[in-house]
Length: 473
Image (cartoon, rainbow, N blue to C red; front, side, top):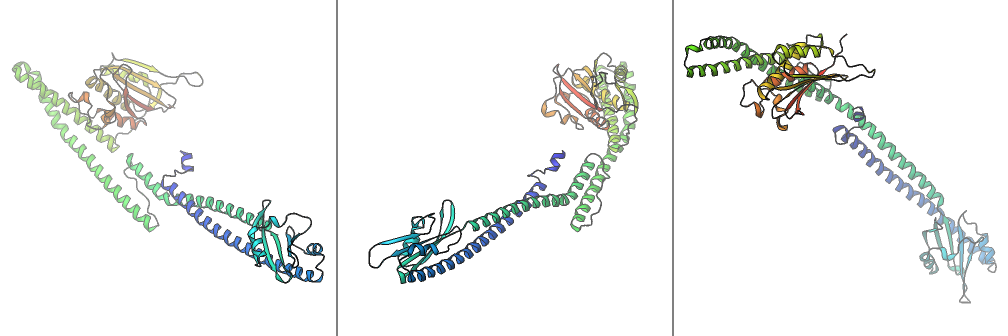
């Protein structure tokens, strides 16, 4: 759970906010970096080209001057040209009196005119002037070609762009790191912002959970923010309406049950009188008396169960905790209510010190009795009778289960049969209020446990109730 909170789900609202902040910052930082890199690259290359062009024209003028002074020593002339470090100069001469043409390159010979861009060489030889970037031995260069008509020559000079490439690489790396850092910072900002935004919703969620688990008087504190204040007021008004409706329904069920208790008791007494004098009636009247007696008994059981559920819903039935031994308590409950013939087994595992888990527990014995008795009566009335009662012990809780000889409970009915007035397929034609298992579930919750049904190893149903283990002091 802590890991889930630390790393928000990308499909949740918090995850989407973090993703939105991250992608927004990434897109903005990337766009800014691209513009910055493009502008810087264009500026640096433009400046470099201007410097190279200016230097190439200056060197071309120097070649023209030196050649005019001493046309015989061309090799020495090209050697005197001071090209940039890492650069290279080439001079092409086209003699007027011969059809020969010559290329003179600087020493030491790193590359010749054949390594220059052919398009630039052809354009310059035709009397034009131009420049072109190229790569030689994986290194970038910019070549400048200048035509010198006065001496029938063309001057070429290659300028290295390695320093510009290094600078651009450094800028590119810096911008990339900046994009990553901005994206990560935006993600943390989005996470922090989402926590602040979702904090009121988390309080609403907590309050809703408290109300759902019985805390009907739970309310939210008024927020200072105007928008959140409207949410809080609406939520509290909704909670007030829900509480009033539930309490009104609880009071109605309790009042109806109380009002029915007296006439049902009177009906029961009258039926008992009729039953005691059944010998005075005909067989047909006796059948009617039997039907009346069974229905009054069922009616009385329903009223009693409704009263108990009303007390459970209202929270009037508090835990009266006693130090009891569950094994002894279960044996006495089964014997007292006529289920002493049902097999009772217990399995208490060993603890780390090889001692058996003690069945002594701090619990409300009345709730244990109601749970066990309702399950035994449910097995008797709807499951062909109880076949086994078992108590299993764990470190933190006990497991009380009752197995029956019925046909089991279908998967589609296993959660529904714990609802009020719900009946399984096997119970539709039998007597009962339909509230017994609902009462079992409410008492189990009051004991900090749960109630569910599963298949019994013998083929019937197995009703299982967990009881929180509170060690006696």
